[in-house]
Amino acid sequence: QVQLVESGGGLVQAGGSLRLSCAASGSIFSIERMGWYRQAPGKQRELVASISYSGRTNYADSVKDRFTISRDNAKNTVYLQMNSLKPEDTAVYYCSADFFGPSGYLERWGQGTLVTVSS
Image 1 (cartoon, one colour):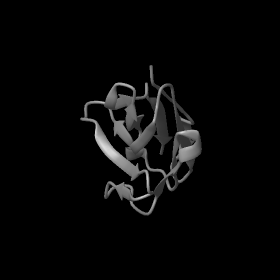
Image 2: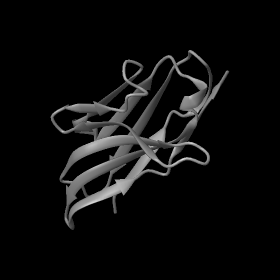
Image 3: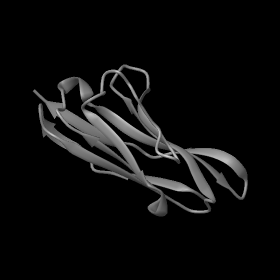
């Protein structure tokens, strides 16, 4: 059983910063891709940023130059440093992991953490 546990969400004023963390645990051989998604009320879930095992990153245009994704492969953990936050960044943020385990190549999602940015 593989679990992803997110932490670090909360309430912050516009212009502030937050750092999200997501730790994967369980029967994992290797985690290939890790990513952060978000879903605002009434909107579809969207990709925020992703990172490969080797460190190659991809960002949504709306967060480029403000957010930074990183990972610690030894800890199976992915981070999202969010700076210069805007009210439109308010959403539930979910992490995901594509990994190899005893059952093959699978994908798992975290339970989500709420980020609220006040104006």
